[in-house]
Length: 212
Ligand SMILES: [Zn+2]
Image (cartoon, rainbow, N blue to C red; front, side, top):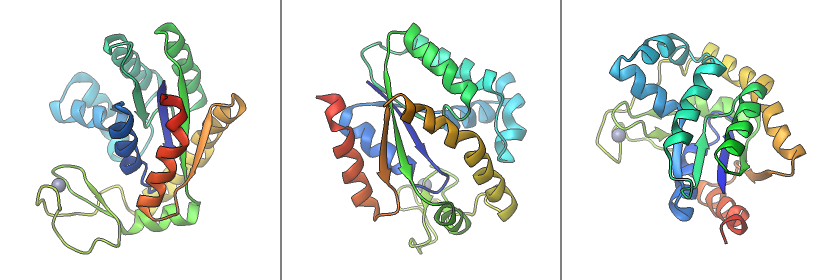
């Protein structure tokens, strides 16, 4: 069983994704990481997506789904995946369901739920490590990354205008996507406004039956 992870920017879904992946041996497919790799290597795809990715815009559905198909075509059919950052639009969800069927796979969606107000607050105040891409909430007060010692910075696209645009995009495009999984009885919701370890506990418990 594959999992598809949802959560507004700032929901901490990256952290929860890691916990789910570790517990249930899921291979993480994070579209943002894939994109950053392409941009860093300066591939033709990287050049094409550099502007939209760095300005917080969405990348074309077709490009996104080509990357997904490539991954599905190469992964061991018995290796469960955890999708992070995809699908983000109705057109992507349709294509993803088609690809999952094509490759004999099945998936449940997991939504780490927070309010718009909480998401905005968390994004406004968070910092990241430019070296290992660790994300630090306002409660972390040191200036260096606890994993690699990198100097923490505010992301260039964590400015009020870009944050507002990303949250509006999320509401307009991704919330309807989550609803399609609800409609198919394929949605597990987790309260993301609790302390991180409580969110993790709830997430692990709620998906547990899928991996028995
Ligand atoms: Zn770091």
